Amino acid sequence: MRKYTRNGDLETVICNGCGKKLIVKDGILREGVLRLDHAWDFFSEKDGEVHHMDLCEDCYDQIVRNLRIPVEIEESTELL
Ligand SMILES: [Zn+2]
Image 1 (cartoon, rainbow, N blue to C red):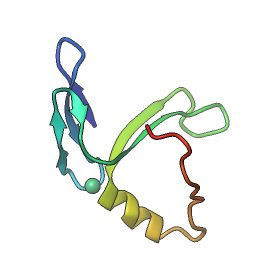
Image 2 (image 1 turned 45 degrees about the vertical axis):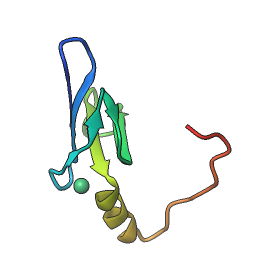
Image 3 (image 1 turned 180 degrees about the vertical axis):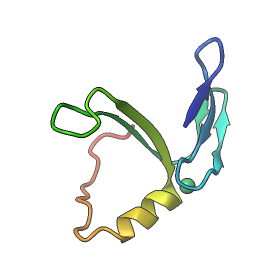
Image 4 (image 1 turned 90 degrees about the vertical axis):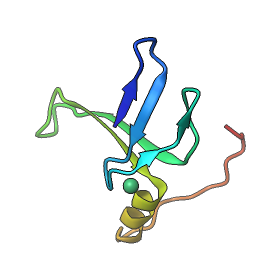
């Protein structure tokens, strides 16, 4: 989950998985995080809901380890 200042700057990022507060400095997140923003559609049971969450890298790794089929990984051609 994320909190923003009144000015719209990023203030706090907390991992939805473990509750860990991630490092934010000068409005910039300084740790790896998986941000998920998903608008559920008509074919789901959550039609009309938009879900947001953040997962720290440790929680992401834990989830990925339990997947039956591994995630697809490729080299990024552009540095973000
Ligand atoms: Zn976590």
